[in-house]
Structures are given as C-alpha cells and as structure tokens.
Image (cartoon, rainbow, N blue to C red; front, side, top):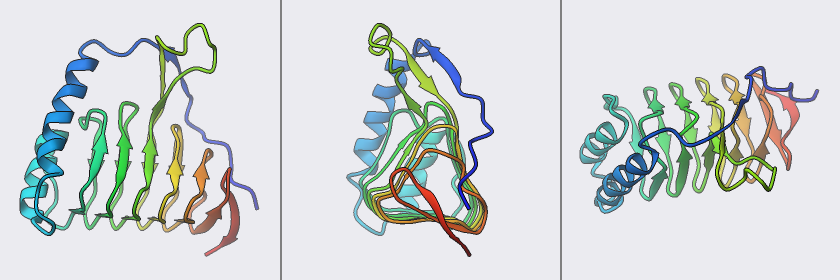
Length: 183
C-alpha cells in the first residue's frame, strides 16, 4: 500500500507577503521569551504561544523548548497536543495540529520552501499547508513537507521525510516516507 499524492494544490511560487520580514522579526522576539522559560512552566508557555499565534491555546497543550517558527500566526494547536524539544514549525503556508497529537523531538513541519528554478529561488517562495489530524504520532527527527496531510491515528516513523499524504491509521517510514503497514 503506497501513500497517495497530496490532494492539496500547491500555490505557485510567489514573492513573500508584505510585512513578511516584520512578522519574522516579531516571531524571533516572542520565541526568545518562549525558549527562555523554565522547563515545565506550561502556563507561561501557553501564554507566550497564544501571543505568537494570536489564538487561545488549550490548557492541555504542552510544548517543550526550544521551539522554532518563522511567523506563528499560521499555526494552530488542537487540544491535548504534546510537542517535544526542538520542533521547527515553518508556518507560512499554514500548519494545523489536531487534537491528541504527539510530536517527538527534533520534528520539522515545513509549509514553505523555494522554487527549484535558479532564477527565482532567492526571490520567491512556495507555500502549502501541513495538516496533522487527530491522534497522530510523529516520531523523533521526522520531517513533514508542504501540501501534506497526515491522516487520523497515523504514525510517522523516526527520521521519515513525508512528501505525500499519509492515509489514516497507517505507519509510514523512510525517505521518502512510504506506507509500511496499516494500524
């Protein structure tokens, strides 16, 4: 059983949105405070995450620093989410983390990139959403790229690079990630 191609339509390469640099600098300032919090101060962590995302963060959410993002405003956390140390969430294309999700250490959720064309690579970006549905576990060091949905109750193995949608209740592994078995 192979993972299906993503149904999301990639957004053509485009210039960064107006205010992009200011949004990144805003995120850096907020992340500096978030990543300086003492381990286990989850009330303070949620308050700073709420400032970063512009959304209320459910009391059941736990994010361990360090945490990195390029903006934060396109990032949504569901309920009962656990994010381990070292997560990078490049959210320009949007990242939606559903309820009951576990994210292992050093996971990368990447919703933006650059065109492969050398003429536009430094001046344009590509974006597409990353959707992590309810009950997913993304293990240590995995990477989920733009225009990917990880289906409900799926598991992404450690070190996997996910370039296509992951069907619900499957285990994917490898580079690029492929379905190993149904769960």
